[in-house]
Structure formats: structure tokens, C-alpha cells
Image 1 (cartoon, rainbow, N blue to C red):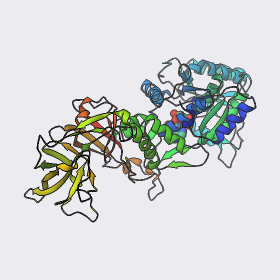
Image 2 (cartoon, rainbow, N blue to C red):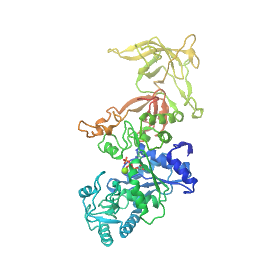
Image 3 (cartoon, rainbow, N blue to C red):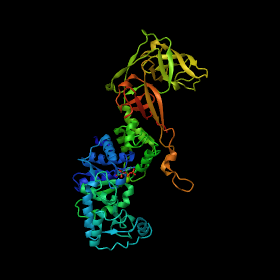
Image 4 (cartoon, protein in one colour):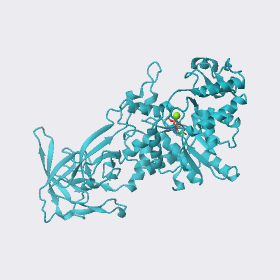
Length: 556
Ligand code: ATP
Ligand code: MG
């Protein structure tokens, strides 16, 4: 992959360049560490581009590690989807994927070591008591009455926790740091809890599971990660990360650096909330084309290169990273502009009879699939006595400066003749149902004599066009921050109240015959209508199904 594709000049690159220049590291090693509790979303795409991108830029390595310490929410389906998404984004992890669960035995042994050194103890406070003992941001906490157990007693209890002698939630293992620490994360954090839950990889082998902070630091060190990059909410966890690594016998000490989380307006970037949309059937699944998941965006027609361009544009910093949907759509559009061949399609057809059509005189032309990319080839654009145009390319009473078709007016059919509207056929309600037009046979590939015809519209021959289902999308939410709207009592409203009821419309469309030859995930521009993709699952060459990826211009 091209090194230019990734965000440049950000503070993490500066740190890495210094570390390489000073010889602190010969080669960098990063990791992308998702928890397999949902599908990846646009925020993860940013983190993927950062971690894999840095490895690309500095000829380093990047691991994929599943942070699977919460078995109740995790599954193999999520593991599979995450691997698929990272690969689809164009990246390759170093070696086999790693799993925090691969380190459960090491983590347990390090915990034993901490107990023996008097740095961890088995506690029996329940969750509520633990909260009370914890203190607040302004008041110190209190020591647990169990804090001064001897190492021998702690060791015995911890081993019996593992052996399954105690009920769920009855005991925890905590680090003995400082209940008065200014940073509440250092107030004797819990590092193990008892949970009898089946784990997607270790099955029922364990009934105690390690906590995130403890696991993450040690997993990074085991994998010789040099730069451990995470989002800003972990900044206050960094002292704990360092404490763990300073207090266990392990050689490497990765350094944690934080950057700001990406948030996308009119969207949601939280697996938990996206899961709610799926579970409550507000969308058809994690890969619904309206979802900000990588799988959803893929199905919508976004390209890996488009997502990488977006990630580069949003950049990496510590300041707020709230981004308008137009930035995402703009990057996707820009990338599709040169990579998508073009076709003509009609979403709301209006029939035209070309009254002077003459099968000997009237000719069809071939047209390039892309005006600037000859290598994409050409296809024939057949004309016939009956054609279709888009309903809104005709107006009975046109507004000023109208350049499309009206009674007595002329327009050019793209890649074909100039036609003139001679007559309008209406139904009993006065709706226009058909037009009768004449062809100026002297305009194929040349300008009309003695007058200017500015408008060019797309069209299809009625006898050649094929039917297709086309899905048009709008924003999934009607407000910028659906998960930050409060009611009169200051409580957050349920974000599902702000779902856009018009986020998808399905229309029966007409399209060039090429549609009957396409594989799933074929991307085309429909001239004047936007970029479309054949649906990854529902499309067949016999029954084409297209999703609109993005319009040709900014929509908001
Ligand atoms: P979620 O709240 O959606 O579950 P998470 O942070 O819990 O997100 P993880 O699976 O733990 O999700 O994240 C894997 C990596 O992706 C982490 O390093 C995390 O910091 C990063 N990441 C997650 N969300 C974002 C985001 N919105 N912007 C940038 N990076 C993100
Ligand atoms: Mg998480």
C-alpha cells in the first residue's frame, strides 16, 4: 500500500520518528485491538488506518488482537466479521490473529506473582460496597477491610476462585495500589472477577476473567508492541497501564498514546447502540447499507480507498473529532469519480414516442463507459421508436432558465440526437403520461444548425432497457447527535426516537442492458443520479438490485 495514503504530520508520527531516530526502536509494532462484541464501525476504520497505516509508513508490523475478556457479549460471528472488514479495508495483520484469551494462563500467573509480592489481594466487597469505598473525584477512598490479608491467604483464595469454589460476584482480585490516589483508576482496581460464562474460545475452562486494563497492558507487552494507540478516554488509565507493566516481571514496556475518537454527525459510533438498532429491528442487520459499520458501508458501495481517504482527511489529534457526514461522502465520491464506469438509468420513467424514428435513418452510437478513462471501454447505446426519460426532465410549465425538455423545446439525448417535444399526452387527471417528440436527424455527433441546445439528459430505449430494483438512502437519523438529545429533565432521550422514517426507498428502475451481466458489488455511476453498487447479497444478473452509494453532489 502507498505510504502517501495515510494521515501525515500528526503527533504520533513525530513520536515514532524520534524513537526510530534515537534508536529506541529499530522497528515499530502496533496493534488493532477490537473487542469482538459487535461489527466494526467508521470509528474503527479510523483506528485501523492509524495502526496499520503507521506500520505501512514506517515499515513496521501491526497485529490484530481480539480483546475478548467479556465473554457474555462476544462471539465468533464478530471475530469473523472483524477479520473480513480489516482485510477488505486493504490491510494484512502480522502472522495469525491474536486473542487476549490466548494469554489467560500468563495473565493468571502474573496475578499469582502480584499476590506473592503483596501487590494484589482478594476482596469480598460487593459492587455497591466497592462503590462506597471508592470515594469520589474530590474525596479519597477507604481501604477495604480485606486489604490486609496475607499473601498466603490471598493465594489460597485466588486459586480457589479459579477452581470454582465461590459463587459469581462473591470475590474479586484487586491491585493494592492506593485508595487515596488522585486518579480513581489507581484506587485498587479490580483485575479479576468470577463469572461463569461460556467463552467463545476457552469454553468453560475459566470461571474467572481478567479485566480490560490489566489484560490490555500485558497483552501489549507479550506481543512486543512499541506504540499502543488508543482513544482519549483511556488517558486516565495510562498510569494503571504503566503500573501493571512496572510491577510484573516482563521485559518490554510499550508506551500508550491517546488520540481523539471520531464521531460522525447524523450517525452513531458505539457498538452497543448499533447493536440496539439490530436487535430492535430498526435496520435489517449489522450490514444494512444505512449502518455506519464497515460491513454496512461496504454494502452501500463505499470503497476501501474511499474510507482510507476519509481517515487521512480527518487526521489524528487530541482535539475533538466530530465530523460532518459530507466529509465522509465527499471522500467516497471523490474516489468513485475516477474508478466507476458510467451508465444511464431512469428512476421515474416518462415515455416518449420519437415520431419520425426511421429504422434506416436513425442511428445508435457507442459511448465510452467513462469520459476520461478510455481503458474502461465502450458499449452501444441503442435508440428505438420508444424511449424513456426521467419525469423531472420534463416540465409543462418550466421555471426560468429551464434547460431540459418542455413543450416546443429541444434537448439533447446523451450520446444521441437533439429532440423536440411536439405534443404532450395527458390522462384524465391532467398528468403527463407520454410525450411525442421529433428527432433532428442532423444532430448526431454534431451541433444543431442555427441554434443552441444547452440541455443534455439521460434516457433509455424502451425495448432495450432492463428492469432493476434501486434502493435510495437518506440519513439514518434526523438530528446531528441522536444520542445526545436530552428531555426536559435533562435525561438522554432514546436515540431511536430520531430514526429517519424515510431512510430507505425502493424504486423499480430501468437501466442499460449491461445490468444483466453484473456480479455483486459492481460499482457504477448512473449519469446525473449518483454512484450505485449492485447489492452484495440480493443482486443477481437476472434480477439486478442496486444501492445508491452517494449522490453526485453534497446533499445537506
Ligand atoms: P465501541 O464503544 O463502539 O464498542 P470501543 O472503543 O469499545 O468502541 P473496541 O473494539 O474496544 O471498541 O475498539 C478497538 C479499537 O478501535 C480501540 O483501539 C479503540 O480505541 C478504537 N476505536 C473505537 N471507536 C473509535 C472511534 N470512534 N474513533 C477512533 N477510534 C476508535
Ligand atoms: Mg469497548
